[in-house]
Length: 333
Ligand SMILES: Cc1cc2nc3c(=O)[nH]c(=O)nc-3n(C[C@H](O)[C@H](O)[C@H](O)COP(=O)(O)O)c2cc1C
Image (cartoon, rainbow, N blue to C red; front, side):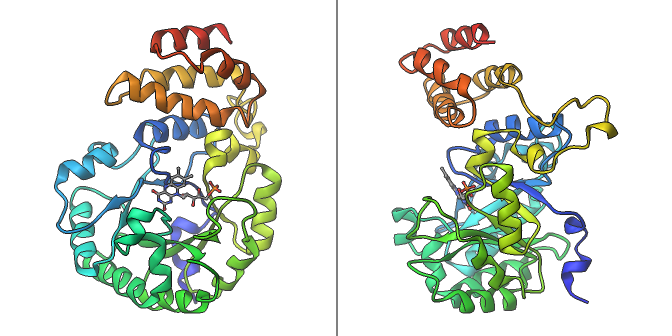
C-alpha cells in the first residue's frame, strides 16, 4: 500500500493557507486562521513566509521573527499549526537550519522551489532550482535525513522554471528524495502569478507515492471544484483568494450548518469582517506606518471580494492616521 493511505494528516482533504511573503505574515495568519476557525472550517495548517538560508545556521531570533507562533507550540491563537518554510541551495546548510528549526518547535519543514524573485534566483534559490532537479533531490533528501523522522518534510514547487519540459525529472527527484508530500503551484516561474493556472498539469505528479496539494488561481468555489477535478487531487492550498475572501475556505467546504447550531452560515459578512480589520490595525507591527501600509494592501485586495470595500478604499486611501482609519471602519458597519 502507498504512503498516501498511511499519512493520517491527509485522511480528509486538507485545506491550507499559502505562504505569501509580505502578505500572510504572522498578523495576517492570525486573522485569517481565526476567521476560518470561527466559520467552523479551520485551516489544517499554514506555512510560514520563506526563511532564506545562505551562509550560516540562522540565529533563533530570526526564526522567532518569522514564526512567533513558535512561542505557542507553533500554532496561531486559533490553533492552526504553522510549518516552517526554508529557501536555499546548499543541502547541508539547509539540513542544519531545518534541524535547528525543529529544535525550536517546528512541526514540519517545507522547502521552497517556487520563489520567482530575481535576488533569490540569482543566488540559486527558489524556482531556479526547478532547472536543477538533482540539486532539489540533494536538498530535500539531506533535510529529510537530518530532521527527526516524525517531523514531515515537504516541498513546494511550480511546474517548471521557463517551461514544463523538466516535469518528469522534477517528479523523479521528489520521488527519490523521501519528501512526505508535495505542493504544486500550477504555473511555471515565467508564468508568474497571471491566470490561468494549469491545474491539469498537476495530474502528472499523482503517480507519486505521497499526497499532492494543488495550488494556484483559486478565488471561488467553482474554481476550487474545477481545480480538484482537473488536478485529480482533493487537497488544496489557498493563496490570494483566501486574503480577498477570508471565508473562501468555508465556502469551498460548505459547512453543514445543521450540525452546528452556533454556525449560521459559511459566509463572512462585511459587517463581521470589519471587526477583524480593526483587530488587524490593532495588531503588532514595527510601527504604525508599516501597519497602515499593510492594511491598505489588504483592503486593496478586499475590494475584489467585497463591494463595500471599494467605498472604504476611496475614503481612506490617502489617510495615514491609524485611528482615523479605525473610525472610518467603524462608521462603515
Ligand atoms: C505576495 C506573495 C508572496 C509569496 N510568497 C511566497 C513564499 O514566501 N513562499 C512560497 O512558497 N510561495 C510564496 N508565494 C506563492 C503562493 O504561496 C502561491 O503559490 C501563489 O500565490 C499561487 O496561489 P494563488 O494563485 O492562490 O495566490 C507568494 C505569493 C504572493 C502573491
